[in-house]
Image 1 (cartoon, one colour):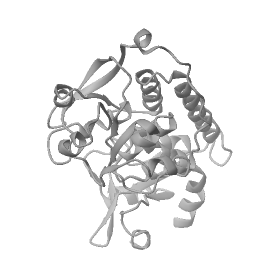
Image 2 (cartoon, helix red, strand yellow):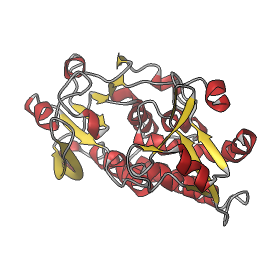
Image 3 (cartoon, helix red, strand yellow):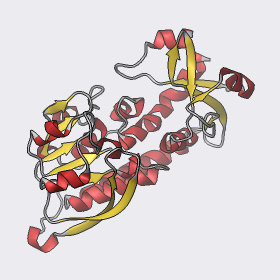
Image 4 (cartoon, helix red, strand yellow):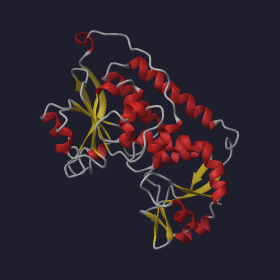
Amino acid sequence: MYMKFKNMMTAGTCLVLSAALLAGCGASASESASSEAVAPEETASPEVAEDSYYPVSVDTYTVSSDGATWTPVTTEYTAEPQRVVANNQGTANLLIRLGLADKLVGVAAVYGPAPEDVAEQFNAVPVIAEGYASKEAVLGVDPDFVAGRGDLFVDGDYGVGTTEELASAGIASYITHVGETGANFQSFLTDIDNLGVIFNVQDKAAELKAYYQDYVAALQSDERWAGKTTKMAEVSWIEDGMPVFGSAATESLQNEAFVMIGLDNINEDCDGSQVSIETIIAEDPEVIVLFDYEGGPDMDEMIQS
């Protein structure tokens, strides 16, 4: 069963993992897997006098201090951000691919090596926290803009502060759409568009968006899985030597990626945080998916369990 998983996923891993670039998930395989994607060559955006372009507005969110409530908002940006903090690695990778590496003054939530296409530039960005950054760590690098995962715009040791708190300190923010409930591939494309508007690099954003659209189209049409459906289940972690199958009910972006490579996630509609072994046996999946990421469980132990 493991070999079958390996054979099927080596070609499809790009998207399942690039879903993270997408979501920028902390310690998920998706964030590190964007190494499969190589961004197109940089092209210069037309120069536009700042006073003739700004202010601009895009749709984003505010998040309550406990992270429980997301509220859609239209935010106005009065100038191009110059000192940017990405609150997670995936967002930093995206900003670099948009040609904005020189504006990054800090990144947090670094859970693996940078993808090859952005490695040199990413490695030059100061890491303000290997894990999740606090508001103090963010303020310490004097940013004028913070972007990334919405669940990290909260109060607490692992939060960069709320959007309102940052605004009171003169810091603009952008919460990515790929972190919202029900996010999908289009959510990722929306983030590319919005960041292109905020930084006045629309040409670069259009080029990068087209690259990912072509990439996904090619992946979906791959003859190894196009038109086929294979039942699969994903292992979340190991507990007392037994695999734990987590519910994937909230993993809309990841489930969409699985569908693109012909995998039907039997955990997708399960209630609760875990799926019983009895349910897995009854569903009889053809493929078991394990996520391998830096700092994660030992793969040999996972496979043996």
